[in-house]
Image (cartoon, rainbow, N blue to C red; front, side):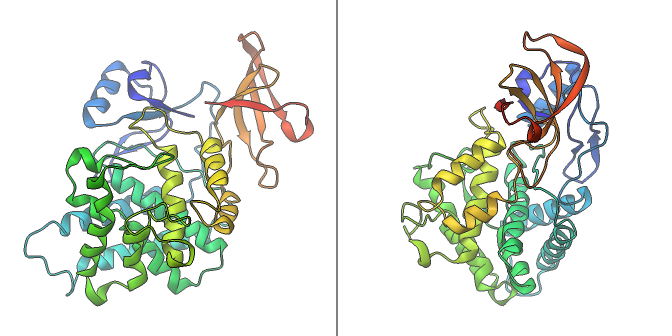
Length: 359
């Protein structure tokens, strides 16, 4: 399964991820053959890229860290909250229905993650330009909670963390559309209008009063701070940054890198992991990065890869203990010809063969 910019999707390709509308209804199922009409329609709907299946894709759909239903409920909760805070004459510090919906979404994500402790985090969903911030918020929540769980955080703190992660980008609702769609990844965004979203978000969450904990609110303010003082809005360092915000910074950066559709060059997971590894100790808490990387796989299932033998294939199995040495279903010969019969190569048993490219 590959993430392909929509203008590069060829008619006849098969959809790699089921598409959902904003109301949670299925638009297209995984495996649907994409006609030119489908591709054009999805482009007009705002999809910048699509996951497409390799010809030798797994027959069984991948198991996600959380169910589609839980993801959709969380998306609706984030979307409705973002819209609520923009309403005139709002009273966020009183009885607030959205808080209950957010709380339910947060606890559902926590429960499903805790029920899938042995599952490697493989994040792949499809976003329109208009839904980017909502999908991103749910992913950051999922990634951040998985890290917090690994760090041994208590259940009560996990709930506060989850709510804060879901709303970490709420300040972007006050930005202009072109500024809102800027996303900080490997290169920091210097646009001062963009940088205002951290302070704006915190100020908005302050209006929630006692309906939201202080640690939940601080994530919005500090998720772009860096331990070496190079972040914003205050240039805080190390212990000055709340642990919740340090977790958010790592999860936020990873998800932004692998879904950097604005540049047209999203990073494959192994490259995003390498970036975090290099930035651990400078931009991010080194111990947290080390634990976070243990949750991820550099070459997720259905990743298309090229081997040092010049053969190409598809990752079909991953060993948590040796994630750099997956099993590859080899589908093409070194000369690029499709093999009449694919074979499986367990790289754990072939230390002389390496993956040289993932795409």
